[in-house]
Amino acid sequence: LEEGLVEPDTEYIDTGKVELGGPAIYNFEKKVWGKQTMAAVLENSINTGAIFVEQKLGKDLFLKYIDNFGFFDKTGIDLQGEIYSRNETLKRGYPRDFASASFGQGIQLTSLQLVRAFSALANGGTLVKPHIVEKIVFADGQEKTTQIKEGARVISEAAVAKITAML
Image 1 (cartoon, rainbow, N blue to C red):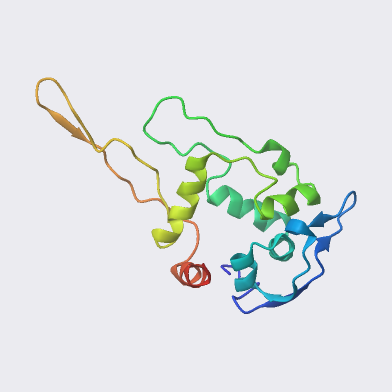
Image 2: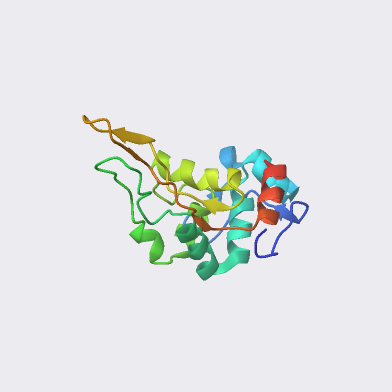
């Protein structure tokens, strides 16, 4: 949506599978959906529809958005010991990896990374650093309040509006 390559009403013909060398990638229960819109792809969680969009984006843009939404980095939450995946396999750029990542199976994420990315929709397209601690009160009564910094814009408000309507 952000790149103008699809709109909520953009249609494609789902054949139930995508062939990229090796075993075919299927929809859940090998269902064939036929003619579908992008809104229906989200509504019905159609794997092949997600692949359709990923292929329209191409490798470089697909990786750019995965990176912009924070899927290669720690969230920076104010807790010790945050773990995450750098998704090194995905970065290598094999078509099957991109295809499966487009519908969430070829990418490693923590729940916090996923919530952070999804919250960018609620924040008008801005990715923010999550916080647990609002303030620290020291034994002497002094307080240190967590400063929330404006995050990076990852998609436009116009794209957010379309995605929100689709969801």
